[in-house]
Figure 1 (tube, rainbow, N blue to C red):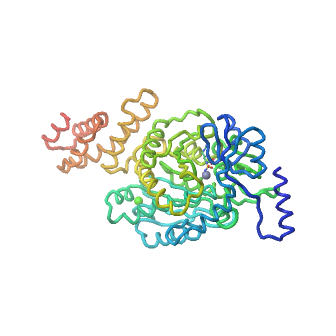
Figure 2: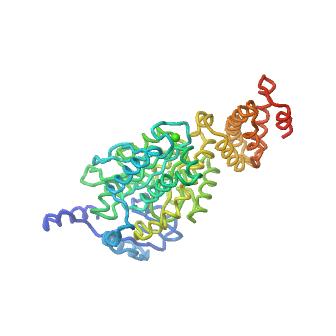
Figure 3: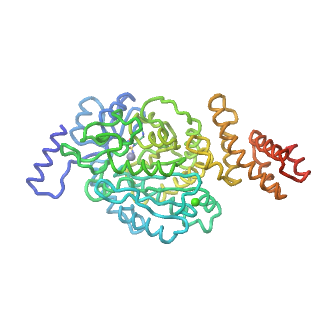
Length: 496
Ligand code: 0X9
Ligand code: CA
Ligand code: ZN
């Protein structure tokens, strides 16, 4: 059947000499499916956009619709001709309500880098298959310097047709840099973090989807056998394989010829290995979900499960999305989150924005306002939860200022205060001790100078008796080993 598609297209272009030809695809809801059958669809390489109890929403052609109906699965056509539908959305854009294109996003990133050069810079992190720059914008104080600050990575558009996934990263950049001068919270965040944005991971795909075939998903690699495109969210190298991914170049979930066969996935890998992020979000559409690893198989143990559940739940409070483990949606090998977490220990999340691939452009502000606060949350928590996972190394901890150190202790102690698992407890404890010692060092400096300001902050730390005792002991130790404090201060520390 798929061979027929190619034959038909060739015939069409021979006859009509059309510059471009393609089959019509619909977005349909296939009903009366067991959850096992839904997983099987993914397994068979179907382009499943959303799944729910007893149904899946799939991108298919007319023949495939008939096949489902013949097999007894009622089909409801949601969008009859996806290409035409998306063209209408494009045509309905106004001057102010408009999706970014590769060109407008590139121009905007460069303009921001020029206008706000004290807090951001733009860099090409590699070239796409067709040779376009993959742009990254770094937002931080001293953006030219690689400082010992917790780092976060925000990505959009692994998948070509998922245009909203560019908008949320761009809206977050806009907020951070435009509010830096006027909003103390934003300034503090930008000054104490390094945030990297890659709004368009798949430039070739975006252009193809906006100018040619609007429901295109993959990159634009010319595969052997005359097919095009690799699914970049199946091409990452942690447990790369063919569960929920296809080895056929025809498929929309084609995983490529090997792990990291695609330049776009390599660019992301290399950036992650270089910058050592603590947390990340990769934006997709659609389904209003917040996903976390592992996604390559069911019930894969995740040592940081508790942190993932907590963070996903907190982010869901901002956007009312549903937090869940990726594999519960469907197991799929080679996605970005599994690599970022599995190999890089990054707290990696995937957001499935919106309730359709491409909502009308009048919705852009809505879904951005709904999601930017969750991104801000993640950037903040890269410096708290991110420090108790292996991605938060000692160099980061030893560079914390007192507020950041206390924030980290507060989050971590309140999450793990009643931890039952002894192994997890021990690991977290080691990290809590390190952060506490860093704070103690700052308290100590301050006390030696006769100031109790830092110490007062420490005392106000809620639920942190553990951290407090680490800090108290360190101050007492220092005092016994030659550091001099005022007697009244020492008394106070002793009795705290
Ligand atoms: O299938 C994908 O790549 C993502 N969904 S989308 O509709 N945007 O294509 C979800 C990936 C989640 N990861 C796993 N299930 N492993
Ligand atoms: Ca910085
Ligand atoms: Zn996607």
